[in-house]
Image (cartoon, rainbow, N blue to C red):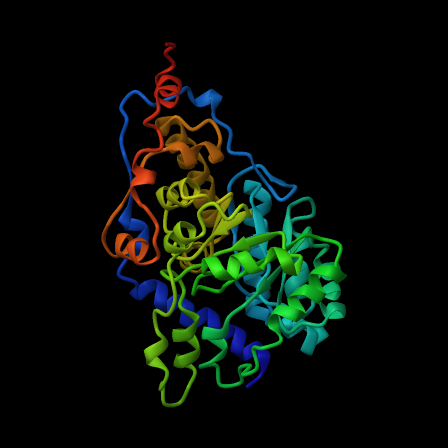
Length: 364
């Protein structure tokens, strides 16, 4: 099967998942404690976020999706247009297809030609050579590089990698050999605390936890198998909220993606410590079912509603959401208990006199 056909299959199977999804995931097991006097004035709210020396005007980005075929090139054109019109960052899909077939370069390059002044992230896998990583960055004039790690996708992939032992060393080589910040991301199975703690020593600047709950690439690759005999890997890994809880106090910049369905999920992830939050499948569904104007409207609405949530919660910046009280429920709470994470600390973050005084604008 050609690389272009595989890319088209990924989009088709991802859309089948989107249309069949039950709608619930572990973001529903995180809720804000409502403080009725916490609200602030909307003009005092900023969506700007800064992490690892990177500054974005909003804590939202269009995460890695596709590229490598005529159909996916058209999708990338529309995604880039939406990023340009809304001011959010955008990541390329895996650029491995370009390394194998340079004739598909324009299906990735369009991310920059349609979005000349935006923040664009290139995307390679952990087996890419340093030279190919540089080629990917140069092709789209990328501001940063995502390296995706995806053992749970590769395993059922008919033509997938089966040698994972060299990945960490290769990530270190890439990070040392490129001139832009390197972000390591999963593809929907999550990054554990242990994995995140290993990244700074490899020269990585940021981690995107990319948890389960959204597009399931193990399911997609199993759907491409004649026998579908890896169904036991469906749903593998940790959710984005679980990853963020697991990574509390690691002292390393985190992004969150995987199962982000609405602005409330964005606020939840920010409150759990993410510097910015990405969405892929939901934005792709809007684009496929509608058009680029529908996607622009959706992202614009999300940005407005994220600011509205910050206003109601008393968070002048996205980072201030980490001071809001959260309740952790259900299986997510069970996960925390098993991993030794005290969920009570999240429920009592604004309980000090100083925090309450600032929340209400009063003085002692």
